[in-house]
Image (cartoon, rainbow, N blue to C red; front, top):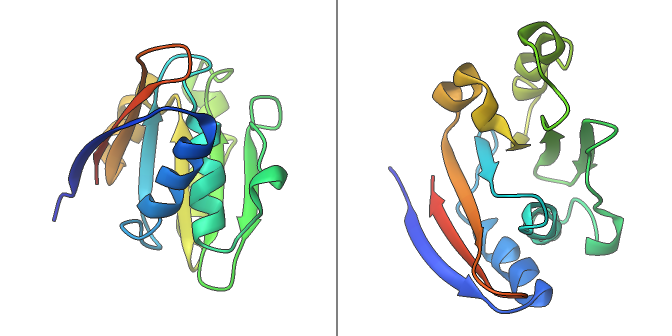
Length: 144
């Protein structure tokens, strides 16, 4: 079943709250592509999702741009926040072991810049797109 939602947030606090709310529609085993320009708020949304699963407090969630994968473990789910912005080749993608991460019990993969690779896009369980509408305003479109 595809959950389709669209809403507007007016601040980082509201985007984090939206992430908490979205944690109710994500399930272990899901891999979701997070789309949006640099600075759109993808990591901010993940802060709320991680909190929603009691996997991390918002201040402990950071962008995985340089580490590529951050892991947040909760009692019922493990959030893998993956950033493919700096990944350019199929070979580099394979070194991340996304299939292995996905097969971990309770794993939820949130993949920034996943649209760069057709196999990530086709194997995903949905997409959350964040569009910059104004200085602090964002349009969040969810299809899971």
